[in-house]
Image 1 (cartoon, rainbow over the protein chains, first blue to last red):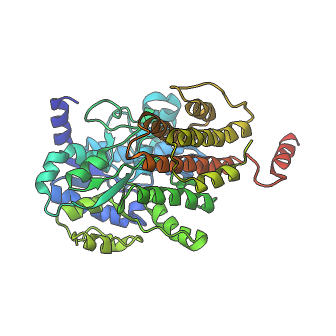
Image 2 (cartoon, rainbow over the protein chains, first blue to last red; image 1 turned 90 degrees about the horizontal axis):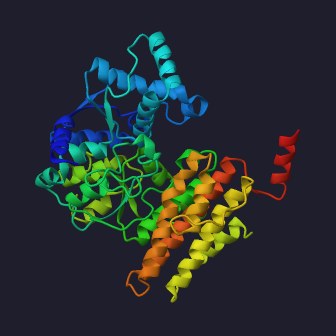
Image 3 (cartoon, rainbow over the protein chains, first blue to last red; image 1 turned 60 degrees about the vertical axis):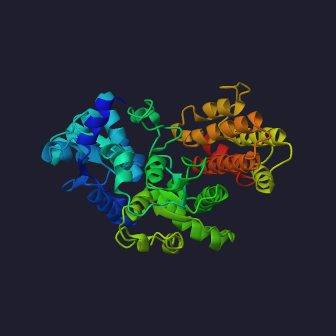
Length: 316
Length: 140
């Protein structure tokens, strides 16, 4: 990325339309509150998308992918046409993925455009046109909106001594073709070995461990239909993180985070397999490093009890 | 063909070996066998081709043809290949024990992913009668 591109992004990401999505109002509430708190502490402004709707997630997509494209496009339409925003930031991997997919489909597929036009007309709002907004993840927002140097300057409570396995899950980087900005060399994210979360937490003082399962499937998609396989997949991720020496798994997706937490409990109950590694959202860790209290970033809301760990490391 | 359960048992019992290269060969063979189950369940002959020097990656490509969601295990396969490289290139490294351990966990993850995927897709042998019943229902 050229210096001009870096500066452009920095200016563009200072103020973004914020699309929390359904999960962040439910099980991922702590991700929502910590994202907002970190944004405030870093001077990055969030304006929540007005009257937003579900992105279509997995359920709608499985029934009619084009209706999912419409649902995601409506969020982007409100951001572009009603809020005059250039950038939509979605911290949830599912939402981020779906908005990026809708963007791709609307740029490439006339049939998707036709469906979106038709439903938008019926719903009485302007149809979204590909390219009106840029959808980014919370990782892009902080990485490009501030950068590691900017973050380092604001660290009050270094995460030094905390060993972190960064877990990105599968939807942040797949399928590659819906993320044209990735894999573009230095400064861009990698789809095979993502590193933005590693970069930010390292800037906050953490010690990242070598964790080869960072994009491995957590079994989230069939956690209800086939819980046992999901539990085994999660258990393998937890064990690998522990074997890598991690104290904590940093997450950036509410579905992965809940899956890791819930199946950690289930693995102990059903399989008798106990693991002790903790799960914290990367925004919670950054918040702690920025001097925010554990309560402010919702550590008490996590199923995985991270407070004792933070205390033992002198971070709380 | 070795059953998925037998592959899982061998991976669970794996302990890092004094001959790291041999261990890496065995682990990648087990990972290939997991992918062979998926390919065979879809009615194909597992490829003997190599991709980027690895049959594992060629099998993954074969398995993902027409099933984009199978790419959710692409990086796991690539990490297995990467660990194979690390172990083969530096068998004397102080990290070789850890690398073997991680490679076994990656292979286990691939196996679990394939097992789950077989069930979601209604393929494979979940009990002695599952496949004949499925084939019968498809014919009627």
